[in-house]
Length: 342
Image 1 (spheres, helix red, strand yellow):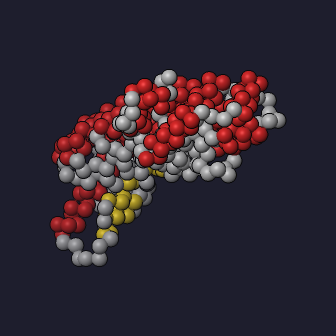
Image 2 (spheres, rainbow, N blue to C red; image 1 turned 45 degrees about the vertical axis):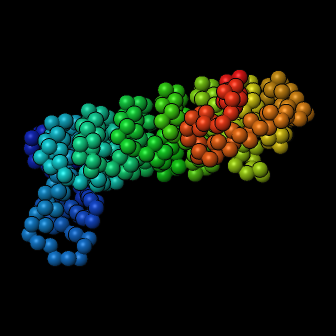
Image 3 (spheres, rainbow, N blue to C red; image 1 turned 120 degrees about the vertical axis):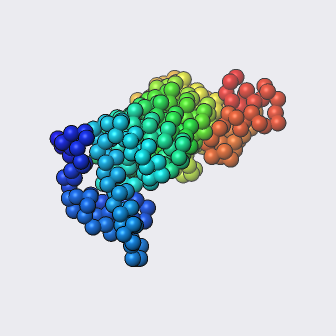
């Protein structure tokens, strides 16, 4: 039976390695030449005792046994390793894959939950450790769980202490993935539990900008705007295409355009977007709305709302926007106004 990483005759048979692997475990690197009984090379240039060599052999053997059990989905074998060696360091890679991430790649969700219960008892499992999938994506478990629409897994990882704002090699956060893949329940959960709505990927796109570019559900877009997602371009001389207002207008989404204007964007940005789309096939009603906004100076109340919303979002780094807003020493009616409730 060929499982890619490890081949097994039966579930109870010994592990047979079919290709050379490198196991990285802290300060120990095990170079395998076809069998776990081969020579072990230690990064530390010290003379190893017989006990130390034996201990490293046992640890490397258990690593492969763990991977083999996950590959075939044997919950019993994984449980036996965890019970017999509770202090074993499980923070290692085999071919750039960690045991925890492998449970997600293979959809062994029962083993995934077993690992997290073990982590709660022993606390020796790094929940933020980066792993590489078969498409070359370098990501922590929380992002893998998001991609798989595994809401229960995301919730469990967050409760156990995983970093909710960890990113992959493209700078995408869990909230970015949930927004892009149109998962409103997960978007709401992540925001309510402290995910940043202003975190940008390596291309300068926030979850909101990405959601607008890919025309995802208006429910998700509204949620991101209400919770303080940045509505202005990063710098004043940025392209109009870096503005959420540009994409809302281009997509012809009048409801979202009105919400963006209600939340507040600068006059210069409205003019920039209007000019960029002047020769495009855009909803005439939206263009009239933009013209009316640019020709009428904003009220002082609206300007204050724009400044306060931007300030609260920046100070909180895009986290817990509504909670932070409610701490302001202002009448409840003004708080509701700032939160776009009225």
